[in-house]
Length: 71
Image: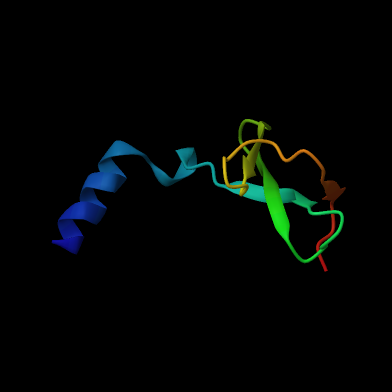
């Protein structure tokens, strides 16, 4: 079953067209820096950036600090 699924994926999208986003910014709670509220991903092929929010309503947090280096 797994071989068939892998073969189907290869037929649909060649590896050169897979564009995996790289995390470039982290939005953290300004009061609790260890709590990540969202992450911005940059896609190498298109250059597009997309932010994914991890808030309860999946929307932009009201207050956050943006970090480009996460320690």
